[in-house]
Length: 369
Image (cartoon, rainbow, N blue to C red; front, side, top):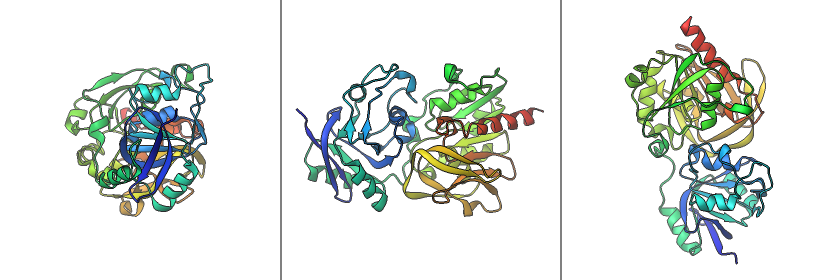
C-alpha cells in the first residue's frame, strides 16, 4: 500500500504524492531539471548537494540504474521528486531498479507529484527551500521555512575528496578519442564529476585530484602542466578559499574551469556572481560560441551566474546562453585562463563541446613549447 507523502515549499505551497525510496524526511533547495534521461547522473552529481531535484519528464526510472553511470561514489542529491516512477527496469545494462537504488542509498523521494505544476511554480516564484516526507504538510512547511537558503552556503567541504589521489581511467569503450598520456593536470576538487576526469584522461592527461582547500603553493609543488578547477555545489561567493587559490594560480599555468570552477575564476579576477531565479538545469540548453557563431546543445546545472559586466576590460565573454543571454564562458585577457558555465563532458550534443578539452591541452602544449 502506498504511503502518502508531501513536498512542502517555504512559501507554503504543498504538493501531494506517495513515498518512494528511503523512509523519512529531508530538506533542501527545490530545483527542477529538464532532462528526459540521465537521472542517475543527476542524483550522483556533487553539484546537487543540498538540493531536492524535481524531474520534469513524466516517467523516470524505466532504464534502471547501473554503477557505470555514477558520477560519484554515492548520490549527493538531498531528495528526489518524480511524477511517475517506473516499477520496471528494462535495459541490458540495468543492475537495479531506481526505487531500490534510492532505498539502498538512503535517498528520500516522492512520486505521484504533479511535476508540471511544481515546475511552473518554481519558474514563477523561484527555487526555494523545501521539505519532503510523510509527516504532516504543516510540519513540513515549517521545516522548509526554518531551513537556510542556498545563498551564502559553501558546500564544497561536504563533497570534496579528503585526500589527494591519482585518476587514470578514461571513458573506455565510450571514448571518441584516446591519446597517450602527455600532460600532468592537477584538478581542484570542489565536487568534481567522474566524467570530467575521464575526458581529461582521454585527452592525454594524467590527473591528480586534490581537496578543495589545497593551497596554490601546494598545487604548484606538484609541478602540473595545467590546472583544472571543477564543478561543485553552493554559493560561489561563499567559497572564499577556492577564490583565493585560483587568484594565486592565474597566470602560473594554463587553467580551465567548469561550472563552479567558472565562477571561481570570475570571482578570483574581481568579478561578481548572482543567484538566478530558478537556474539552468537540464540537457538541452543552447549556447553560442561568440568566436565561431556555432551553437552548442549543452548540459547545465547551476543556480548562480557570472555578472559579465563586472569583468569588463579584464575578460572576454566567449559564450552566451541563447535563452536569456547569461554569461556561459570567459577568457582572461592577461593569462588566457578560461572557463565555461556548462558541462562539456556530459555529451548533450552529444560531443558539441568536447573541443574545450582540446583547447586546454593546446594551451598546455603551447606552454611546454
